Length: 427
Figure 1 (cartoon, rainbow, N blue to C red):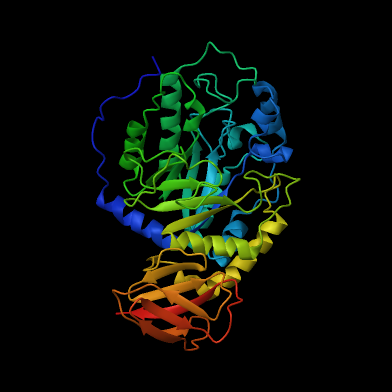
Figure 2: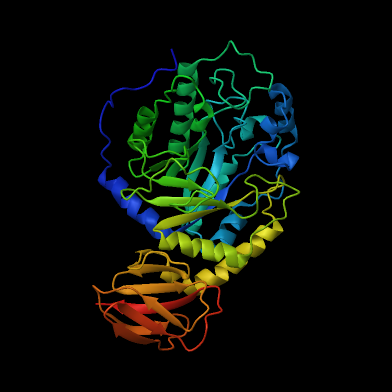
């Protein structure tokens, strides 16, 4: 029986000291890059192409023989991310097509080392580059699988020609845990495991038991500081260390994925967003968000006490799209000047407003003005004293006028920068 629901938790999850320290460090990082890269990039139609085009699972496997990312240079990737101000990377170790982008004994014959002419472990190359440049490496891992026959069929992947009499939850669960063990023992210290796909069984008549808590316990046992996040679009499950918001900032539901989620105050928050419209490489998708939009997205996330995980879909040849590199360069120009106002901060004394957000580090309050039509900005702060107002970019003094209702910042002109940051001292 693979579809039995828990009624009693076996043990309450208590994060270790290493885990709590890792949570705080994760919150300090603020900016990460998401990489959706797999053999699906060869088709240039995104990571869901196998399901969307109803490609037979045996036919899909034939593309593996042509996967040879001759332009892949993990060090160049990581250097570009580092220069953009990125502090961590989350890469798809295995997406819904079931193909492993790392050497996996558990997935014999269906991994990048054994099944492609490239024959090298792309994850190992990336892990080495991350270690060299001080970037934390996280792994995306799919709970659902359109290739394996023992995966219990869910809402997706039903038109791929797979036999329906080979489903075996215990076999599949063991496979996943064997792979997670490989990921956490082959590549050094890993920052987080980022799960996706449990929503594949949301439509089941009887709630499906993914045995998440035992799986999370395995991860924490192998690497106590490794954080666990799950993009299940629901409230936290015991054992999770990060709350994920897909295509939305915490508290928003414009994309329709976060309607069943309450924003947690006990774990770090992360918003994952696309740089264009797609996750995996899509050759027809040229709808890249502007640098201004991406930078303000990063600032908004920080003001909501969240990280931004910004996605790029690398090409099949191993190159990052030119437009993505251009955006990274522009973001890097901003972070090199203003990174101090978001890295290591927490949400500030003033909650997000139409004009922008605030962040805070120690006794420094950073007022991020993103959209303001006036030269004056009122801050409704009455229980703290503010002093020493100045523009962060050049130290120009900003006059502060105190009243019973708060403080008025008097600017010399209407703000026009992507982000006009006023630094204040809080007493």
